[in-house]
Image (tube, rainbow, N blue to C red):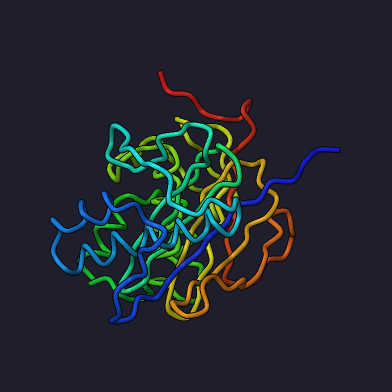
Length: 251
């Protein structure tokens, strides 16, 4: 019987108190001291959240050693440990953790937090099909933010930068996507009252478990999403890669 795979998305709304760092190695805490107060708090909170997930799921009491990839993205130095992705928006820190050594990408955005100028710059990266889908929605700003968040999560998975729009096409009307870099991606994006989040995963993932971290109560399980469910809700958008034979290749 084929084993089902799950990934885990946890977020933490930071308060004024300092993150608990008992699961973080001392050298990581010392490294964070070079940052300003706001960046240091986010840096340590993200790693605290990741450490709590690793303890909850794998029983690993201390955050394993980490390295930076060529584009600066942090990874575990042990290649047998799962991939993860950090994201930040406002006072919210998010972590997406794969259950196995599959690449993942996470992006989160606050609803209506961007200026008109920023939204217009986001629009430059959209295809005509994406723009048509946005204009067909009840809330164009929310829909635009949703596609932007989807795009960023996928580009994190593929280790591409923000300007790699030519390698990625989203087809929200049909629930599909095309990536020149990878042909095996699924992405799930949900709009909440204050937050838009998107998780990019391999198609082998069947479930996405949502967690919320509280400084007093540790990790609280919110819900589990069946990634193959047909009806996920009116504000949820799931895109999957087109089959390999239908991918478009440019010489």
